[in-house]
Image (cartoon, rainbow, N blue to C red; front, side, top):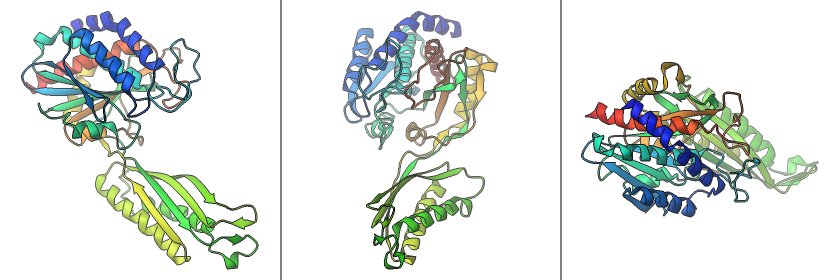
Amino acid sequence: MKERIKELAREVHHRVLDIRRHLHMHPELSFEEYETSRYIQSILDEWGVSYESGLAGGTGIIAMLGSGDPVIALRADIDALPIQEASEAPYRSKHEGKMHACGHDVHSSSLLGTLWILKQLENELPGRIKFLFQPGEERLPGGASMMIADGALEGPDVEHIFGQHVHPSMKVGKVGVRPESFMASCDEIFIDVIGQGGHGAMPQDVIDPVYISAEIITALQTVISRNCHPGIASVLSIGKINSDGGATNVIPDKVMMEGTFRTFDEGWRAKAHQLIIDRATAIGQAHGATVDVRIDKGYPALYNNPKLTNLAMSDMQDYMGADNVILLPARMTAEDFSYYSQQVPACFYRLGTQSMDGSNASPVHTNTFDIDPEALLHSTGLMAYLAVTSLRHIS
């Protein structure tokens, strides 16, 4: 079976490359992926694959292969980012200010290639496979949560789910994964400090929101350093500060701050939110200012089921070679695949996309991101192999 899948991956490689280039040239932002969705549906129609469309706000798709039980799912995200591409490649983005800078074009084309491979083997599948083409990974509330709400993991119920993501710091031909906690939760913090502005030469007559904001920023660092167990990874960063008014000699009335809080522990996450609110408002009260704190709860932590992931690592080594499977460190970045991992056993892994000569090494979310085309050979075959072997493990 392994050699057949590798042969089929080679056979479909050029088609997958064409699909990826088409998607890369026509990026669409989160929950606006209408042409992308129609393009994917046209390929599914061409291949005679049954599917349901119009999910997760209108652009999500679920395709299905196989029969009987068990049932597993494979997921790809389809949205792009608001980035102006700097590439001169012939397949560069045709849409001004929009780019597949996070590799979702790779994920979607790869999943289509995986589907084509498994379509050729459909009569031999020991169960069913759902293929989730999911919108809106880059924007809250996250397309994954909406796909789940629309029944993506039900009817029939999914035993477990796989997802993959490009990893430009890793060479093509390699994959990386980590059992248990892999990616952090991600929450957005908004703090408004309302004081009373005035002349900078007469601070005794004002309630200075600039100074109060500085004190809040300093105090918030102790939320982690003096309240979080040292074994729980956490990050609290204020990334943006603005004011209403103000000048070299004018103290403003209001300062607005924005930041992020990330961790791997859901219990600590809830406690930290309250500490952030309490700490900031108390400092404001001590100085006679009003402090409004809003925390927009984002994606939860991504947890790779240990049993599923360890089995998958063994299968990855069988398919890719033991030296080409890397145990990765946990990451403080976030991914809405985490919603699936909160519902069913999940395995999310990284695909090496950097060329052997060191080119195509630009990080995701940059305007020069690209991949080595050989990565699409490994991405399709490996996911197909994981799907077949995981169904057999369940059976």
